Image (cartoon, rainbow, N blue to C red):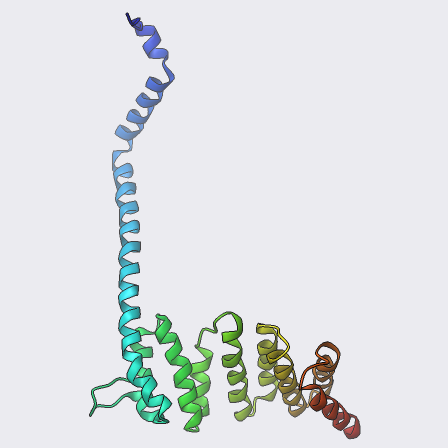
Length: 228
């Protein structure tokens, strides 16, 4: 037979005491508690809604990229940029404007930069590549190098050199690193910074002795020495 608890024992029960405190807090702060719960549900619901919306945007942008990429590969850079009314296609610029926050929209900025560069629109190319989010790893090296190429065409040699160094060190390896260091050395020389030009050419020789860039680096250092 179970033993009945006395009134005093019930009143001293820690669980019962805690429950009473919670009840009292709830009664005194009912509006705030309910408001907090509603806010939490809205945040969670909003997060789920944004995820599905973002996924939908990604799919739409990726589908629209197909025709623009086809025109790009065919060398039809204007059509790749702006689309074709006759064929009812959109270009990279529309994708950037409407889906700029997606991965496809980001890639469209890179494509647009290449299109503008090939059309001789270097400032527009620079504007697009500056807004391009560079991917991690080896895939980010080429866009960085291209960024430096655009700056070189615009005569910004010092800034181009800095970007070449960034490309060299983005994903360190025995191929793209010495190549970009060599390009950086040329850019620094064109910017009048022979000290930095010499530094990066020497780094190729010292740190990448098996690189195909070594012979070029040695000739480059010889030219700098001859120029005084």
